[in-house]
Image (cartoon, rainbow, N blue to C red; front, side):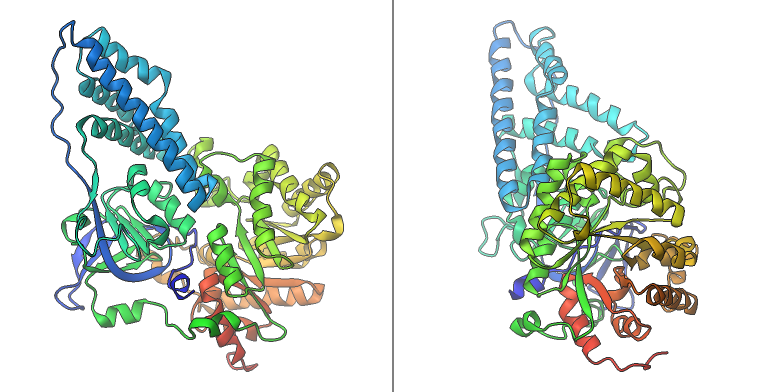
Amino acid sequence: MQDRYGRIQKQTEFKLEKNIYMENPLENAGTKEFHGLAVNSGKVFGPACLYSSEHQRPINDFRLSESEVASELDIFEKALKECTSELEDGAVSVASKVGNAEAEIFLTQKHIMNDITILEMIRSAITLEKKNAQYAISEAFDDYEKKFLALDNPYLRERATDIREIRRRLLDNIRKTSHVFVCEGQQNCERGKNRIIVAEELTVEMMARMNFEKVSGLVTEHGGVSSHAAIIARSLGIPAVSGVHDIMQHVRCGDTILIDGDLGKVYINPSTELTASTMPKETTSGAASVLLSSPRGLEIQANASGMDDVFMARDVNADGIGLYRTEILFLKADRLLNEDEQFAEYSRVTEALPGKTITFRLVDAGGDKALPFMRIKKENNPYLGWRGARFLLGNPDILAAQIRAIIRLSDKNSVRILFPMVVDAAQQDLLIKAVKESIVTAKGKAENIKLGVMFEVPSACIQAREIYKNIDFGSIGTNDLIQYLFAVDRTNEQVSDGYNPDHPVLWNVLKGLVNAAHEAKKGLSVCGEMAGREGMAMRLVDIGIRSLSVSARLIPQVRLEVSNFKSGKYF
């Protein structure tokens, strides 16, 4: 159990820092600090496991004789067959250990590898142009990679990684080269078990070889928020930082690494003082943490982005799931899920926590959680664009399928549907109308369905009393509320000082929401990161909030904190 508590809960908040390496003069001489892209939040400290790839030799371009063509084509076909089989086996392994959505990473590469157009290019190059197999493979996939890298859509550009990896896989098969753990063959090599993996890029082949379900954290030189490393990190609930240039040149197997996934920082051989000040303080441990229940009159629920979070919430006896981020399922699968697929995934959540309250937030697409596979027109400022409720109302088919999938759960469970990024009562009413229409077609039990609104846009906070007339509960998303309230980009380090949860203006807004909820005699919770910060839980309880939703790992800590609550201590 303790091992599970050692992992840091995932949050899908991405923060872009400058990709630089710098010595930190405030720490001991051995500490090295790097900045990158925070693809999964949380903090972890532990030994490094260096994972690198053998460098490819230059590809020789030579012409085949007529008698060599058949054998060279056979070399390619054999490599294709073996690599396809490897990807299929990898999909089965990942599906059993992590989930079906994550396994689609392998299946996607399998389909790209077997694309008829690419295969014909390679076969023609060998049989008609008499090029050797390695050069034909390299030339075909190089051409596709360049085309992807030239696209405007950042997600599609990132898919060039798949093209590059497929080329590497086929060439490695022919050359009999592979990815290796630097410490492989040594007594301390455990393929990433209870260690922090450091790699140039996390590939599908690498994931199949490492003990990834036991990895503590990930640091990569390349890859973005929808890369394989990011998807797996969010699935496993481990801190991850990507885009850390040249870190492979500075770290060795066995070095200690400190990841701050909230800020996108990585420290090699950090000092004891830095580690102590960065890592969350453990307030309780062992079985006592699990058995601790919430104080009477309060509920401490868990935020979840997948089943790993749900199981951890069950282990710490969470009062329920206060925020289930459904968009993560779409991001993992790299496609839209149909009604039946969603219903199957949501059923797993309710089955894991029978009798507990589950709040499913509808797809919160846009901003830092875009669904790039939809190829939505590029926006100059996506945080102020087509996201949240606007996205849902603009995609009625997606909205209806998701609502029906959740409503089908109401036959046997009490379910809560949470509307994201609502700007006013009029927008909320359109979403409620969509739910009511779906209750009939999905044959749901209306008495088992509760509707709520995320208060994260200032205009919705101002209109809270009007909004509360037609909903059952409210939930405060402090991450975006602070960003929009103070016009501060929480991913921009130049204005990071303005992202301040202590600001009195924010607390005045929170008190106003509490008053509106009390007048309506309806529930109000806080599900943003702020609720899990040390000292904040008691302050929130002090203004009248009785429901908090935090990282599952932080629940024992928050329960202990609020158990010492004394009314009027802060305000």
